[in-house]
Length: 210
Image (cartoon, rainbow, N blue to C red; front, side):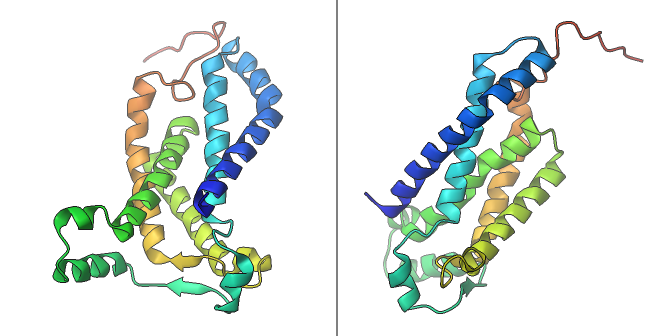
C-alpha cells in the first residue's frame, strides 16, 4: 500500500470519527433550523468531515519515513519557482516525449491533483458557509499557505525536519481549484444539493419583498 493511499485511508477513518462526535449536535441544529432531520444533510456533514480529515492527512502528515527523510535534509525544503512543472514538461517535450506522455506525466498530474484537492473546499466555503467568491478564494489561499508553512517547518517542530516540500506552485494550484469550486457552488445551490440548498424552518414566516 502506498503512503499516500495509507494517509487517505487514515483521513477517511478520522473523518468518520469526527462525524460520530458531531452527529448529535448536527441533528439538533437541523431540527432547530429546518424542523426535521434529513438523512441527506447528515450525509453531507459526513462528507465534509471525511474531506477535511483526508485533506489534512494528504497535505500535512509525512508521506515518507521521517527518519530516512531527515537523514538527507536539515530544516525545511522550499521551492519558490512557480513554473517548475512547465519547465519540466518543456524539457520532456524537447527530449522527445509525446503529448499523451506529457498529459499523463507525474509533474502535470501532481498539479491537477493539487487543484482538484481544493475544489471541494471552494464548494464548501461558498455553498455551505455562504461566503462570497472573493472571500472563499482568500480563505482557501490562507489555508493553503498555512499548509505550506506547516510542511516547511515540520509541523512547527513536531518532526525533526521539513518532511514535505513547501512549494509555491502548490499554493497556486490549490487556489485555482478553490476558485473553480467557489464558481460551481451556486449551481449546486440551485440544484438543491443537501447542505447547499437554503431550506427554512416550515414554521418560519414568509419573507416579504419590496
